[in-house]
Length: 116
Image (tube, rainbow, N blue to C red; front, side, top):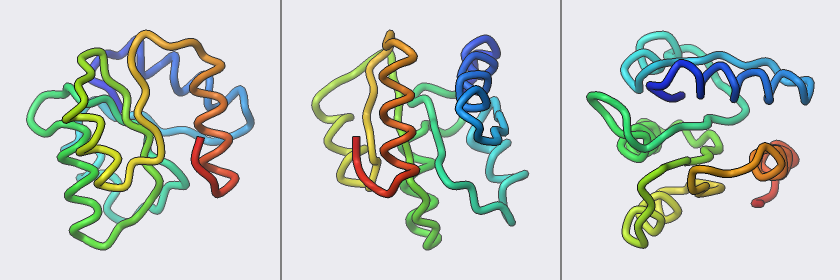
């Protein structure tokens, strides 16, 4: 999930190239609206989005008892943000820009049940 359409498209293409299905959302609200009955294997979310940040979304999902693996990405990293995301259960915290290989390793590790 990312508010930048080009990033959403690139990420979805990368995920699909690994043989996984992918859905994209422009905002946390879009995901919450559409994803109510969904149980994705992993959520990849940007931090900076309109309305609700990716970390706030992760915290909301956890408060609702939805413990899906989350990979958090951001172009504006800070130690506090990293700690908040990881303390909230994020499986990975990636700083933009990063190579596709970094996302591949993170995603494969998450989907295989471990941490990257």
